[in-house]
Length: 176
Length: 232
Image (cartoon, rainbow over all chains, first blue to last red; front, side, top):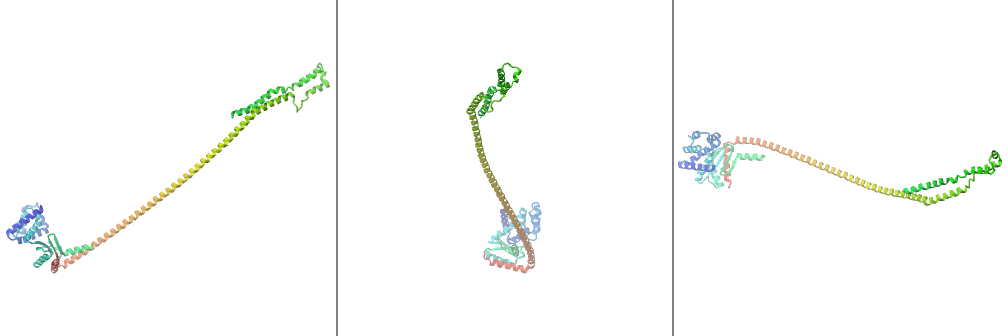
């Protein structure tokens, strides 16, 4: 049921963004908002709390995205939050991005790194992934300090972990 | 038995009766002294006082006091005595001796029977004694067997208890050793985990301090090269 709802909302977002003509920008903005939603507990609990009036939740969305995102992106987030689906917002955004990439015959590679990747690094990483997996991917970078250093790439269920955190964990396991 | 005794008593009683019955005629010689004196006095005529002083008469009268022969009894006594003896002898031969013989035989038989009975009783007593001794021997053997058996059981119980105690002690020692090893291993593991945690914490801090932008960029480039080099 939840998966069907996520897929349905993702399809709706894709349709609206496609119609509005700024699909790529909407993807980036929704992706950034979803990452903020994941990392900020207060924002997550506020938007996902049914006891908070819908108007108050929509006001929070408007305050956050008013001058940081396009009107399409704000409207789409307001639609999801207003429908009481804020808890599924990250999953809906992920499905939307995958749906958009799929429309371009690409997969989504979520890259977590301690620092942002340069454009050159993104292109080289996409080429490297295509070389190693045979998939055309679009790189989505998530800055994650817990990685410490290096990169963790997730393509669907596949994970390529080259982080310093993984090496420290391996070192920790070797001590046991 | 009783008849034989009656016969033995009857023989002397019969002899006594015969003697008493024949005593009268045998003592008639006492009466003959007076008669002798009267006869001599009457032979001298009328009796007066002078006659008694006559020496011839006195001699005759004194003859009346002379005792008969000490060896040869009066004839009538011989006859009576001989008859009585014969009767007594016949009675003794016919009745007394058989009775005495019968009593003697009965007594001998009784003694023999008593001896036989005594022998039989002795044999029986010996048999009883042998049986008793055999039973005593059996009882001693049984007692000895029971004692040996009890001793064996006690030894077995003792051995079982000792074996069980040794097994328990070995188990306790083994468990104590296992617990000690486990505690030691746990302590080592805890210590190793603590050391690892401290070392990792220090390593993480060192890594974080050394990961500047250039190093981060180099790590990303190395990762990209590694992914590119990997053939999926």
